[in-house]
Length: 127
Image (cartoon, rainbow, N blue to C red):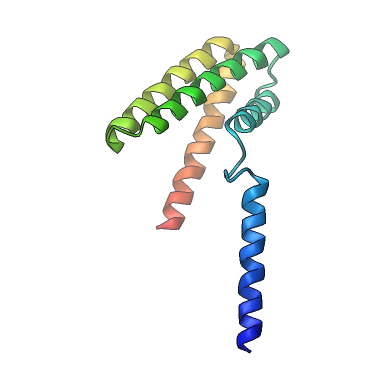
């Protein structure tokens, strides 16, 4: 029985390790993959033109680079970092809204509201 439990533990550890390696140790992929996933999703939801896709990709790429730099510094306190990241996201939202048509802006706002509600629900479920 002890041998069986030990074998199960080793197999589980191996599966977890292999899965982590598959994603490069990151949940959800690399920053570039996350950016592309976000652009693709918005392109589908908002029916972005090719030019808009390029602009949105650039905005998200710059935002991700700035956030990675903030995380890499890691010197500030969490509250200060959260405020800076919130300001950065707000700035990115303004830039994205500048690229969108009026109908797309409405759809983008609705999508943001859906995401916010889903996030709050997950937070509530985890507590």
